[in-house]
Length: 366
Image (tube, rainbow, N blue to C red):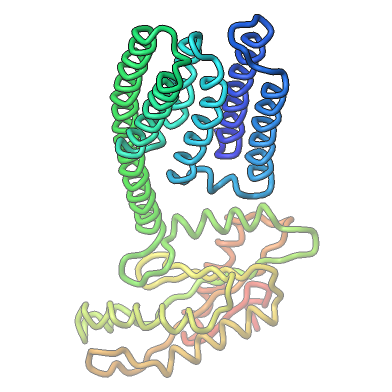
């Protein structure tokens, strides 16, 4: 239930409570239970309606969030008790029939008010009822003092019970809120762990690039979303003589060369391009919405940048180069077939002297 609906329900319950008091008030007048005038009944009815109209206006004009404030909740209860005191003060001997309304008004603070605030409201209700009886006793309008004393004691017992009940509900609500917050924190931590697991499952630990499995998933998704006339640029990249680098400089240097390529490659591609470690020293590049010129220029720019790169933290490595096999993929082509054609183009680049970019759409004699 939303906050607005909860507050509207609470307002409706308060209006119903006021209506119950007014009905009892009018029945008492019409039945002649006390010598009240119709003018006083009309005045009380008008004041109650005015109070409800003010509360409803505040609710409808954007103050609904403030109704969750504990101080305002206490103020509403005190206002309700004050309006109840009016018919109680007029009913004299029959006022005991309205004692239950005090408890009903206080129940609106159950779970909302702290025990101290709720006890203040209960004390105000009891003191109000006691003062009304004392005034009547002082003015000698109270015919049965023992009945009035019994009513006061009954109200005191009811108020003590509702205070204990409210404190119990408030504690339960606070515990539930704490558990809800703890559960929310655990859910957030679990979401973070799931995100980390997804990242670990989709990236290569050494280079930080996507791994082969996730690259193929993205390539398949891009292929499925291809529109007529659009093409995907696909390139397979292999670092030349990488085994020689490992044998001569060691695996630590070899790992640093792979990391250097990943850094250089990420600076050469645009946002939205997909770069992944395809396996070992082989990498894959996917360029959405691409043409032959753009794919060729991107791969050539990457080749030149890598040839002039210097791995950091290890001894200088000479002769860094790479070979590239390129292919354009359209909606009519198959992804596996294009990967095979890119691999064939890469094979031609390796056999053609390495350190070059070869396109699958070029003839093998070129």
